[in-house]
Amino acid sequence: MPKIGRYGHAKQYKLMRKAIKQVKGFLGRVLRDIDRQVKRQGLALTQKQDDTLNQAYRLLKQTRQSKNKLYSLHEPNVDCISKGKAHKRYEFGVKASIAVTAKESFIVGARSYPGNPYDGHTLKDQLQQVETLIGRKPEICFVDRGYKGSGVEDIKVLIAGQKRGVPKKEKNWMGRRNSVEPIIGHLKSDGKLRRCFLKGILGDAMNVILSACGQNLRKLLKWLNFALVWGCFYSGMELIQALLPRRLENEMAF
Image (cartoon, rainbow, N blue to C red):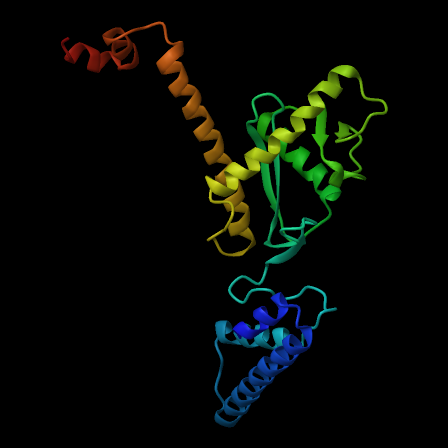
């Protein structure tokens, strides 16, 4: 009911709870009527129908203190992620982790983490993915303050704001940790990471990886465009002849 959201936005919680109770009453009546009809007629439900009924019962019984709440019927694996920001306290989706290089900001690791785990517990798996993709283990990792207590010992982990035991060279590189924030913004706006249209946990994982690949390709295309316009030593028809295959070059006359 639209009234629930309106009462909650206006902080009229008594009326909001009353509206929620009314909607739950409607849902309970429908479910009990379906159960009576199924038992009376001896119908066999399909797997999809049975899953829908189980989700409805789960939605009817859950309370504010319930664990593993159901937030979406079409995507039951959605989690409530606390952001801690004034303008957006919560986000509903699946947590994703992005690893980029400190200098060029190329994405070298991207994966999703269903179940909303603690950020520090995801660092070891993310570094393992980076080592698998690039073929070498990173020496230093710059992270934000949410990764405290990661438990990574074979790689030097520097947390944002850390001052003790940080050499001057690495302290200068620590400022590059903020470069991952605009990359995440580009992934959401340009790479379609803001909303996933693929179903299930596997679809979430595929969406993150494909968005990261698209970001790297867009960056490479910009570099190639810059090289063709400004950095190439050829000019005019010599540039076209240098780029064309030898077979096409022989067939064309200038």
